[in-house]
Image 1 (cartoon, helix red, strand yellow):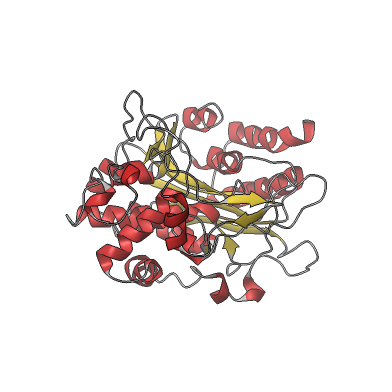
Image 2: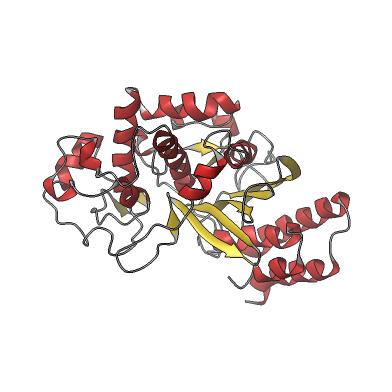
Length: 367
């Protein structure tokens, strides 16, 4: 317990003394990332911080695998797990801004042949985990067990009852993002992967992001370990098939992800006014969700933030105030850990050093 609190105590001590210049910030964040790695049993880390489009920090810690001597670098590729959902969310927001759909549309308005119980589920309910759809896969011995094709997903689940009435609660779900994939393919008349490339990767020049594991240069792929592995890091063998790329099967670098989130904040993918509207909490029947168009929303003092966890090992976060005139991006990638540290703890440990007001820095640890 004492060791786990060490990064927080180090961070709070530096927080109270303040970072007087960028050189000091570089040193502080490098120390913080190293302390996190030691305390939480993290083999590889890659961290990027951006303020208003300008990179404040880029740092890497560790090696590509526990049995490797090759250091993590700018071009190291990590599996990003559910952060992949933010690409699907962005494509969906683009379609909504173009007037090709509304998030309130029932999915059956755009996709035919779905089970009758799914007909009235809205796009917003799908991307905000309020659909009640059954989960399409199981996990056995840490491995994915599920259908081989997307059509088999539909066939295998069409007669299963919904887990709850749509929009009555939030329950994290992957199946909804498979329907979002189908929706995007229907709208653009091309594969989901090609749409991500055409609408996001190519326009932004993201050359270190891959939607198919087979295309990732193996020498640049960081080994994946389970979160909360215990005393020894255990290899993670959980990977979605290609049809799951809209839910959790993308591979990327910290810098590419920072460029993606930064471009989004700058209105290059979705206009800023629309983006701020999309980032309002999804409204359940009797409550308010902590998802907004698929992004996890929260606040830290005077700053709102949106982002997403990936595999309980990594996180991306965008912080902003009433508008997007001033913003910070924090990308904190790791390849697993020994003690189960939650990814928000990692991003918080960086966030506490970069926010300009002490209230928000301290509030980082209490929201």
